[in-house]
Image (cartoon, rainbow over all chains, first blue to last red; front, side, top):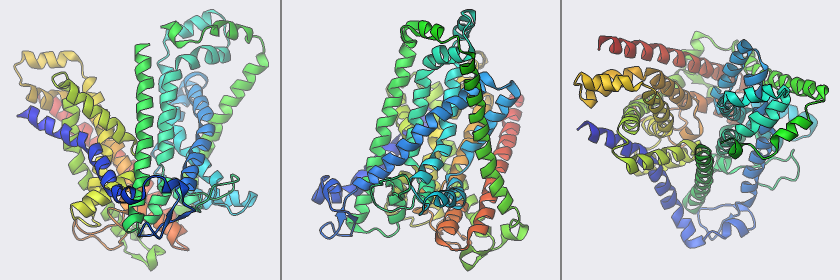
Length: 280
Length: 298
């Protein structure tokens, strides 16, 4: 009796993902059926309409927007996150380390819409002062950097805490300096944990909606400089879902399906890495 | 083990670079600099919110209806809607989450394949972007189950979203309960069901609390998944089938769509942050209290 109840709970929990995929697929089938994948790449522009024959559905600039914001922020945040973790584990006195960890956790708890709002009223005017128009790829990258920093810093720190004490003792016995110990011993030993954190961070950056929507300007174009406004896949869904009909709505579900696919690939990669660690 | 993790020759490399003291100093400086910069950004964000928001927040702001598209008036209906959405979300996700966590932690050896499948799908679910939850919620709850834009649909969408967080920490909590407890319960002749209810769950209360706090935090902070499920309406909700605007959507709408709404957006953001802090605190106190008492009674 009990076991059946528990099994039912687990079945419900486990089937949510299937339901999500099922609904994304069924909703995107109409447009994939009579239009195919190719038009999302070859059409002249993104001017969707309820009828596939009238609209144009080129998702390329939007995908480029997503990739650009993600890549930019990950490139900045990986060193910052690593250094933050190193600070917590090896440089800060214990009290300071505890405060700093608490601060990072609080940073992780700030809602994304609040980040977006702060970006809109503080960061965007700041960028505008350097180079108009203000809402831009750069603003998006910066706000994403602050948002994923906690993910990467906390996982990297956990990985560094798991480095066996014996390695550190060995390094100390060899007379290595703190920097040499970090570079030669700690970081290689914590590599796979750090990598898992980075992948989680990438997933978060790809999926982030509100903050990006509020600071990126949302113009459909391939950016030529970091000061150009861009639109990402997630922002595109959030902006157009409210009034989308017919094939347009379907097209938005297709972009949801693409996002879902990306996330699945990332999860599998992360799992492979952590599995290799536990076997190695 | 060592060979597998460390690249060949790491020792020689480190030795060669032992000498320069200035490099060590630079690294130290750089590490402290980054920590200071991160702290500065945090202080800047929170300080900015408090500085601009504190002036607007008053009792009447919290209970009043919004006027003039939110530029004036208060956020009473948004607070009620947020509370209702959260209640629906927890009412669904907590039982399902606890059940699943218990199954995965205690009984998964009996159902190996099933457990692996469930865990794999929860891993994916944890990474699904919130906007995809929004798409799913609007297609499944709003259209397919005909709930329309409603608090119920929003709460159920959020329940799907917090499930993996909840399950993961409760499961970790249950797994960390010492094996002696289970043996002791078995020796006393408790059935497995009673052992779970009276012993394991109370003993796992830190994990349960962490899960609750993280789940509530995620649910309150959520915006993208709610736009197309619980809707935009600023009226006071009368039932769970009414559309209701959450605090987070209010912030978004005020700052993006309403010119001159920044002052109230600041105040709403401040209220949202304070709510997050207070709920975390209350959840931990309450859960701590009642679970510990049950443990003692046993």
